[in-house]
Length: 233
Ligand code: MLT
Image 1 (cartoon, rainbow, N blue to C red):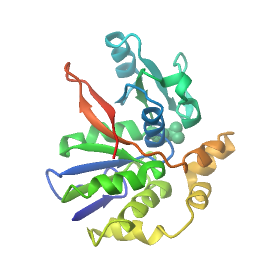
Image 2: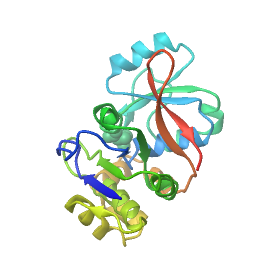
Image 3: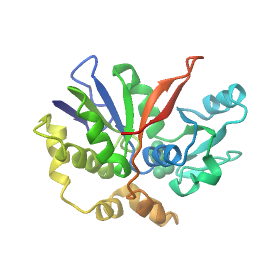
C-alpha cells in the first residue's frame, strides 16, 4: 500500500489519481461531519462559500445551514461548526449544508483525484479498516489558511502508524513521528486548539477525541450534488 500525506493542501500530489482520498480537518470540519452522520443526518453537503451554501439551500429547502467563519457561527445559519451542536435532536434525518474556512474547501479541491472520505481522530480506526481495500491512498491535511496544522498532521500520523507496512512519502514519515503523543495533548498544544480554547470552545477539543464508528464517503445525489453519506465498516 502506498500512502502519500500532504501536510497542507497546496502541496502537489505525485499522481493524477488515487484509489482513495482521505481529507482531514481534525479541528473541526471533519469531526463535525463524522458526528452529524453518526447522529443519523441524511447527508452533509460540503461547500466552499456562503453564497454556495445559500444557493444550495434554495435547492434543498429543508436542509440545515451550518458552518463558521473565524470559528464562529455564520449570521443567519442554523448551526455553527462545533461538534457539540450536531446532536441527534438537531440533525437526525436532516440534510446539512456545511461551509467552513478550510476543511470543506479541501474536499472540493481534491475530490477529482478519486473516491473521497473524511477522517478525524474520532473515526481514524474505522478509516484504517476501510483503507485495507485500497492500494494508492492520498491523505490531505487541511491545515489552516495555508499553514500546517499540527492536529491534522497528527491524525494522519495515527492513521499511517496503524497500517501494515505502508510505503510513505516524507509527509507520512513526519506525521508518523508525531503519532506517539496523546491526542488531547496535541489538540491543546496546536495553534488552532489554543485559539478555540481562548474563544471559549475548549470542550470541542475533548469532543474531537471521542471515537465514532462511521466513515463519511463523498457521494453524488441524482441531481449531481456532492454530499457525505455514511458508510459503516
Ligand atoms: C476549518 O474548516 O477551518 C475549521 O473547521 C475551523 C473551525 O474550527 O471551525
